[in-house]
Each structure stands twice: as structure tokens, then as C-alpha cells.
Image 1 (cartoon, one colour):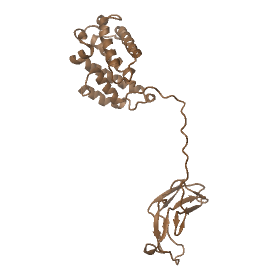
Image 2 (image 1 turned 90 degrees about the vertical axis):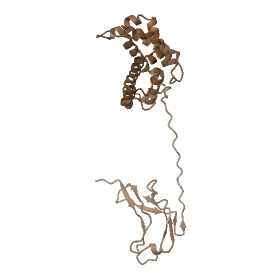
Image 3 (image 1 turned 45 degrees about the vertical axis):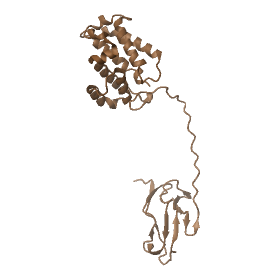
Length: 288
């Protein structure tokens, strides 16, 4: 068994000569432990000691307890070679005030790594941003259940260097849930997209959205750009480049949409929800 320190506890004042007369009212204060000629930098539990020795409190057999505290001093040369000593601020009439050593703090190390200009929205900001953008309240029971179950997977700190793939997956899932609730509520859907989708939600998306620049695409693209980019209070500064990128990506997604399904024909509602989730789950919302 290895030992790495010495334990000192409940120091007493006692004379090794049982016949010695201990002066009454002997003042002892500021006791410090030293090892091998050097006062220990730590482990000075008795530095605030302030006791008066003698009188009825002192007995030749047991001495007088100075403190009930204990302390640990690191082992240096080992029990056979370590030499201990005591230093006092005051011992009787002898006074030697202890002067705290001057410690010069180390200069901060310069960093060569540039700090990122942006951060990531934390879990509660993501939730509130999606609610503000879509108009769907955070009190929606379906969304509350999804948010509460996936909250721990969302970003907990704004450092972009700590952003993980699992965070993006959780954001995308929550964004898809908000878009689903948005499209299922006629009042909220019309407030976001206008009434142009209502009569065609169950129609095949290929016929409704057509090619680039079609009126059907403009309904979805313009609504997402206006609400997620220009009217999003979570964005510090609106970027025209971000708006153009969102427009181009949503247009490209709608172009690829017919080839993405090997099963039933994709409807306008499904395609719109996918486009909505792609934008709301992107960096245009989560990057701050």
C-alpha cells in the first residue's frame, strides 16, 4: 500500500517535562506546518489558530487541545527523511507576522484559433423560433410531446464547435412536426401560405408545382423565404444570399420530388411539408 501524504489532526500543546510550569495566558496564534525547511503552500488549516494556553485548560497528562481540525501534508522525501517544523505568528511574547507570498498570475495564453462568427440556437430557442415562424403555438399537444421526448437531443449550448449530427437530426424532426401541424390546420396554413394550396392539397404534386417559376412553386417558395428568412426574429441580420439559397434549394427539391417516391404519388400536401421541413430544419433557422 502506497502513502502519498501525512495526516495531522487535533494538535495539542503539551510540555514533554511533566513537572514544567506552563505560563498562564500563553498566546498562540497563526500556526503553520513546514516540511524540509519550507512552509507548505497549502494544508495550512491552523493558519487562523488563535488560542490561549495555560490555567485550568492545561493538564500535564493531556496538555491542551489547540484545534479540532485536521489537515493533510504531501509526502516529499518519505517518512524516514521528511523533517517537519512549526511556525507561529505569535508564541507567547514572540511575534513574527506571516507575510503572504506575492503570486504573479500567469499571463493569458494567446489563442491562435479564430472564434466563429456564428453560434447555434439552443433547444428552447429552436422550439420558439419554429413556433414564431409557423404560427403554431408551442402549447400544441402533439408538438409538446415530440419536443419533450427529443429535448435532450437538441443543442444545449450555442457553441458551433459542439454541434453534433444528432442535434441536426433532432432539429429536422421537430421542424417536420411543426410543418405537419401547420399544414393540418386550415387557418394557420392560410396565414402562412395563403389560400392557394387549399383546393390542391390531395392532388399530385408534379401537376401542381410544374417546372421552375410556376405559380404553384411560387406559393410555397415565397412563403418559406418570407417567413423563415425575412420575418424570422431569430435571425440577427437578414442575408439576401440566404434568401436566394433557400429559394434555389426549395426549387431544386420540388424538381427532384417526383423521382424520390417509388410508391404512391406524392401529393401537394406531402411535398409542401417536405419543403417546409427542409427550410425550417436548416441553418437559416438554427444558425445564430
